[in-house]
Amino acid sequence: MSDAIRAETVTISGHGGDSIEAYVALPLDEGSRGGVVVIHHMPGYDAPTKEIVRRFATMGYSAICPNLHYREAPGAAPDDAAAATRAAGGVPDERLVGDVGAAAEYLRGLPSSNGKVGVIGYCSGGRQSVLAACSLQLDAAVDCYGAFVVGEPPAGFPVRTTQIGDRIGNLTCPLLGLFGADDSHPSPAETAQLEEILKQHGKTYEFHTYDDAGHAFFSTDRPAYRPAAAVDGWERITEFYGRYLKDG
Image (cartoon, rainbow, N blue to C red; front, side, top):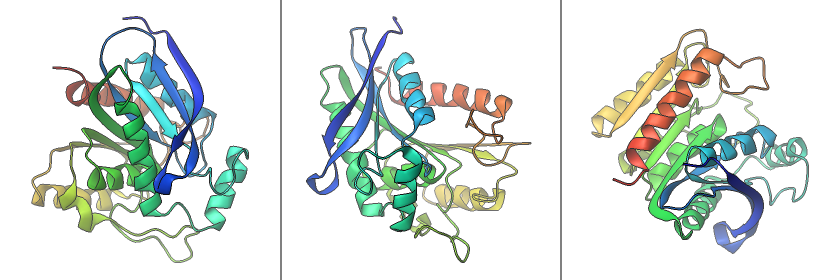
């Protein structure tokens, strides 16, 4: 398989028919393949997130990241767009589901699609990945240290968000969760609570918690980066998506 890809910015019709920006990376080899919707973290639709989109393309998937902050600040730098979204209270859940659903349909509409689509999110995107998987028909979901899937945010938290533990019964696909033992949002107690809810509903899931890792351990451009946890996490993502998104 060739790892040659094409990456570009496109416009998709998001929630409510709004035109929004999205970043797409596609393998150039022939054949049918699954797709991955990447949900960016609160800091925004930034260069590290676009690198993740390209990484999935080199792994053999069609990948897309919708710009969740586009409506608040079209054309703005990622930090400015994120600040505008925070000032507005964050990305509304209904809008998030609509935008991710539109991105998934974009991938399914590609000539190379095998019809299977997964989702992955980091930080706030981790919670949103679970929310999308409880609201849309997807084939696999990955939650990378998503806060407030269970548990309420502390007083004064700058973004309006609520727990979604009561929606786990609607989860439509297998879930992979990757967490840090030193994280406070989500804390190990919160991930244990989520695991218990998944068990109660008979859902297919895998959770892995890394010692000596806190929040954002995948972020290569931050002091929180933990190479051992990130390398193992990518291996688990590769195996998980290989199981649920590839043909056969």
